[in-house]
Image 1 (cartoon, helix red, strand yellow):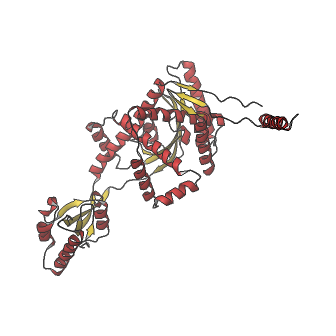
Image 2 (cartoon, helix red, strand yellow):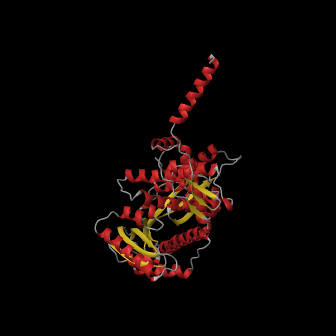
Image 3 (tube, one colour):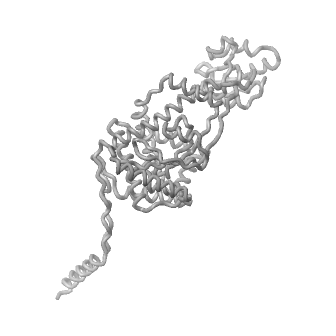
Length: 434
């Protein structure tokens, strides 16, 4: 054999030995088909890993991998259906809106953008993934608002009725944090199926009363909308809960386990995890007057500020009155004719710079010149008072509570409708072969 042939033969033999010894590399696969889209196995695994990591951080135990996988797949299906709806109507969250949201998040946490990025990466997540996850979350919020809000109507009669109830309850607005487990039943279930579901519900209650962890039990057993969060609903007033819940929670105490409660969806189990608080009835109002000067090509920023400083000197020396200067010079037409008077109002009604200045003032005090989005101001704080704003607060709150209750109910109905009309096929993972 020639040296050249020996070399070729050797390289071929080496390649064959690598082919024989190399282990098969796992490839991504389709886990679920949702209409014309798919959910990949990698997406399922990523969410499973996230749920397990969160549970580990909180010292929370989890059910079997099979039960957890079922809940994760269901969440991904509903998410994909909503994103498909957003695509169909052309809803897209652009980079400018996303950047503004991220900047607001950083500001709320008293961080710079660089500090927020460092925190995200220190938690083991890439900032690009954080951005895209946030984009998806915003998209989901928007599509839910668009699709569900139009299904909701709140009548004046509903608001009046709820305001009356709040007043009759002595304005006590206790909020409950509840745990919820739903044992679902098939549509048009027969007597045997209903009895079986009730038995499963009663068995779950027995486990809970025996000390079983509620969150773990919910993840393993519940078909409710919060199953993947351990069945935990955030603090809610009874007036914004689904009616079925409100009727039984109203008289419950912390730690009570209630159920099974039958509805069209199945059998519900509720645990009162916590209850909190009463809401204040009084608000602080301020009575202030101001002078506004708006910078322009004719009036510079420096000149506007200097004029206000001169006004302060005249007021403090007694040469002029605040009201007279406001009538002559203020460019806020609404208040100038009244000597700069703004009337009684909460400071939160004003723009941030104006509010912040008012909040730091005492009765009878004059502010130094300051800049807001409208221009340069000086303020005189004439008086403050605590006022009973119960009626308006109750009216506003009643509308919000009714809307939120209906939103939660209609959101679930919309998700159920989408899922029922979608083509969904779940592909079970292939067993690992030895």
